[in-house]
Structures are given as structure tokens and as C-alpha cells.
Length: 437
Image (cartoon, rainbow, N blue to C red; front, side, top):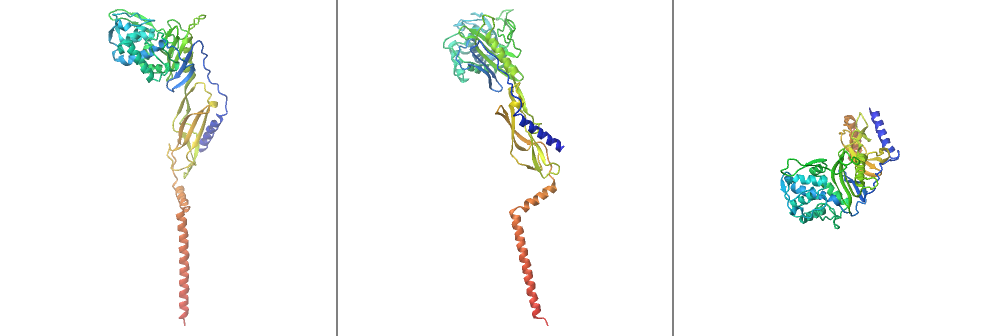
């Protein structure tokens, strides 16, 4: 058993050394993105940008503005979704662009406003929600800008709740990502924006109008070219000045990816939607191109550490205390890109040894950068041999200064005693001679 463990340890150590010299890496290539002004792909769980194209460039936000409108409105109205409201003329003041056809006097549930705004990009629904929250469009826009500042969207300025073009209304893909993350963190909003079909009806109507989501990443109604099974919705829209914008989300394997694409267009030659094409490619790149990799397993020995005072073994195996799992490209070449090194904090241990005793650290590197560290602990309990312990104590004591001093003192006293006894005997002998007849 001892020989087997030693062999296993040697094998693992050799593997760690080999990993620094093995085959070259073949990292997954980024997708070719064209026909858009700016794009960004981000993994939520690891707070990591996986792709960036002009992400700090100021652009017009178009319909991505509705992410902020929905986020603020839901925060204020989430407990009133089933409440029926009556549309007023003031609520519709300033509405332009695509509409759900709402008119003064219409009655409908607040929840329906979220569906029509997020599924179809209805600007009248956006304005009504803004009014319900703040009492006026102007007051709501002020709140939008305050919230943008609180989220760190330093290059964003909002001018209306729907996204219709205004010269002073600008953003960046990096800023849009911040509101997209906040939006995606609200489960109900993600659910609404990912709904493919919804029956929209006003109060008092026995039948309504079936509306379909115009986001081609989650809906096959208009085209199947960009559909992606892991996409969860969010926002799609366009203006002439901004071009087509897509803010999308995908979830798979316990990971969430957010994608922002701004400044796409419809290719006149092919009819392709360059924004949807870019978003589809980026989401696939995230979901299929990255994954969690287990690089360290607590069951795998790393090295051995000498042990004394045991009659059964002279070493103990050191194991990682816990697993190290890291977010990496799914096709990473672990043999060449991942390396390991360990550092011991003990030169040896004396039995008894308790399993789980800390004795060092194992560090993990990806392409030269440290990506993890874990404590090394003993893998077994080891009993102490009492005879060896006794010999060890005798040896330890004999090497001590006190013991040496005691021995010297004893020797000196013995010598003095011997000399004294000899002197007394000589003296007695002389006395006996003096009185002998």
C-alpha cells in the first residue's frame, strides 16, 4: 500500500511538471461580428466581459431605453400588476413611434402595459407606465437619470421613456450592460420580455388581440435565422439614427450571459438583421465557448510529507482541502494552459497526525496568471508508536542544556565524593599505623 501511494504521488507530481511543457493551446476563436457599431458579451456569475467592440463609444440607445423604464416602473408598481387603470390624454402626451394603439379612456391592467412595451416595444405603454410612477413624463425621466447615475452609467443621458431619438439622449454598450444586468435580476421582467405570445385585451372586451414578440432570438414568428434555444428575451427595437438594438440574455449550465448590440441594420442585399445576427453569435459563443472546469479535486494526492514516531509509515499524503472549479474556455487545453505549484509550511510532522491537518498550499495558474489557491491537508490519521516516542524523548532530553549540566554536575559530585572517600581512608590508615604495637 505504501509503495502504491508513493507511486501515485510521483505520478501526480510528474503530471504537474509535464503540464507546463505539453501541447500548445487552441483557444476558442471569437465570432466574426460585422454590421454593428458596438457590442458586448458578459458573464454575470463571474463578472467577466467575454467580448467587446467599441463598448465605450457613445451611441443613441433607441429601444434599450425601455429596460430602464421597465426596471423603474416594476420597482414602483410590482404590487399593482392586476390593477386596472384608465388611460388619460396626459398619459399619452408626447408619444411617438410604435404604439399598442392605446387611446384616452381605454382601461387595462398594469401588467398588460409591461407585456406590450417589452414584447412589441410599444411607446404608448412606456409613457403610461412613466406617468403612473411619477405623475409626469418629465419627473420620470429625471428619475431615470438618477437611477442611471446610481448604477454607474456615467456616459448615459435619458430624455424620454420610450427611446425615440433625441440628440441629447446617448449611452454606451458598457452602460447599457449595467441596466441590462439590473433588469435581468428581476425574474418577472425577464419572464415578460421572453414571452413569445400574449393575449392583450382591454377591460370589458371578451376577446383580445394576440401579440407576438418581435425579438427574433426568442421568437420564430418572423424568422428562424436567429432563434437560440437558451435565449431568454429582454429588448429589441430601432430608430433611424441609432439603427437596430438588441439587448439579450441566455442561460445554460448554471451560467447567465448578457449581450448588448447597438447600431445594426437590415442588409439590403440579403435582408439579414445584423444586430440579431451578432447577438445570436455572441450568445452561442458564451454558452458553447465557456464552462466551469474542475481543476483540483480533494481526492487527488498532491505530494507526501515525512512523518516520524510511527511504526507503520514514514510519510503522509497531502490532499487539497476543497475543490477548485474555474470559469474557463470550454476547449481549454489543460495540459498546456493550466499549471500547478505547491508550497509546504511544514518540513515534517510527528505522529500522532490527525487527518485534515494543514501543511501547505496548492496554487493553480492559467496561462501564467494565478486563478486559484487551496490549502493542502493531511489525508490520513497516523498513530504514534509509544516506544519510538520514548526513545525520542530520551534523545531530546539528552540533547538539552539542562541534561548536559546535570550530567556534568553529577560527574563533578561523583569525583568529589570519590576523592573525599579516598582522603578519609588515607587518614584512617595513618591513624591505625600510629597506635599499632
